[in-house]
Amino acid sequence: MTRKQTNHRPGRLGVWNDELPERAFSLCARLGATNEDLSIAFGVGISTIENWLLVHEKFSEKVKEGRDKFDNEKVEKTLLQRALGYTYLETHHIKGTNAKGQPYNYTRKVKKQVSPDITAIIFWLKNRHKERWADVSEHHHRFNGKLDITHLQDIPIEDYSQEEKEALFILGMKQITDGSRRN
Image (cartoon, rainbow, N blue to C red; front, side, top):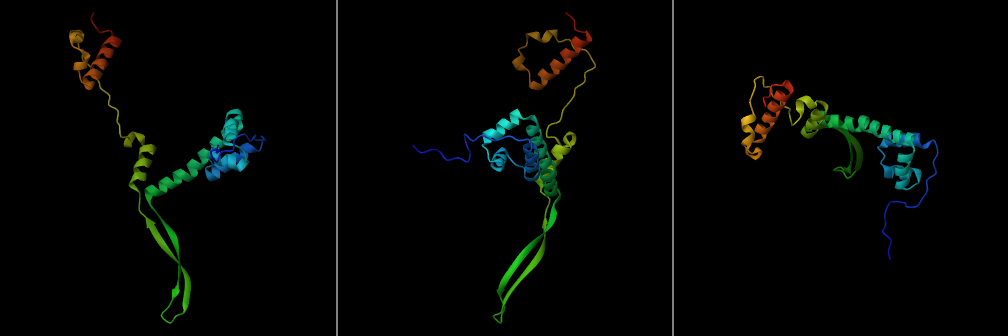
């Protein structure tokens, strides 16, 4: 039988030491390291990393802190940059031969503009300003009058629309909590 090839290193025991949490923090904060990346960096199997995350509280905290730092400093910054648009310098290496047959070789820097990305803008606004940009808005209904809902009990609930069901529920609860429901 042929053994299935994987990147996972089963059966290797990792040697724990107290420097690992700080090393894990550094790898996660600078590179956004995954559990697989950590296993390669520490020369252990992924299951060992997963075990350390469960057993060693400081290791788990440092990995989480490092990943949060990476997300906050790198990913959020990049998303904002995409949302706003940006410029960058692109280097062009140009080689060739002129009309006299002489070779030339030079480098030229070209300023490039990346336009704002509408998807990044929407994503940023929906997450940073949920109350103004959410796809779903909440509606609150107020009813100050009294409604006698006892005559409605013979009508099957399936015959009501969802909106009617919600209104009846709200009105019924108001009457019960106000003590105004008649028996």
